[in-house]
Length: 325
Image (cartoon, rainbow, N blue to C red; front, side, top):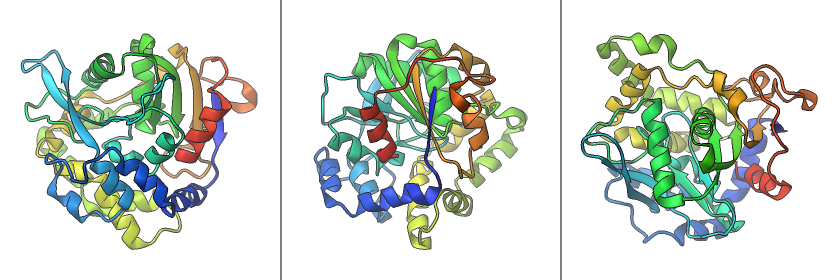
């Protein structure tokens, strides 16, 4: 594995703000949409002001994915690429309790660079149709992603996972190594030990906690921790982007299902990862410990819990992903 040191969140935001000033990136996003929001998105999407979020939201689709429970099929939300490349496709996961809209600023950069990029909503989050309330534990999330890959991508992919999405990527690559060519882990939260005591909460308390999870004050605080030098109204708008999927009627059931299952605990799986892996992290991240991220990469020597892996992705790929995030 290799770590790429980003520096402070304000440095990252400098890249994002520079991106927002370039209208050509919006044209890239708009190229894949029909100019209207999909009817399955919550009506609150109309109030979002961020042009990149609005443009990417118009490209969200639902594709059928076969599963092994009674109704057998989930209409699964994602962003399909306009570009079909001969190279390995990028498959972009998202953080805990998030959606494909997390990639709103990155996605046009990736397509502008000529990459085939899929942004996929992890089962239980995002904008998939979960009216039938499928289980949303780790095994179900893993199998859903595999079935999505098997139906639509069909070739080894570069799997990109930020924060908890890194745990999803590690778990998936260990269980379905044939589907993955490389991993890119961004501020990976790979040392979290699942939901721990939260898995044992009584249902009434679990649902109360989940209701708090989608509250504006809590998510506003999380956004304020993640970004420096951003106006209150911008952070509020980004908060509304981040909680948009919470407006779907099955969100609470799906999130409680995940919490009660114990969540992701991939510590023992890290040693089993055999794919070439790039780690991108920020020294001043206030959510995921920088020390945990880099402990296996100091001086090129793997530390506890990290296996010795081959060299990371090619320099061109590193540059594009670093700029995009």
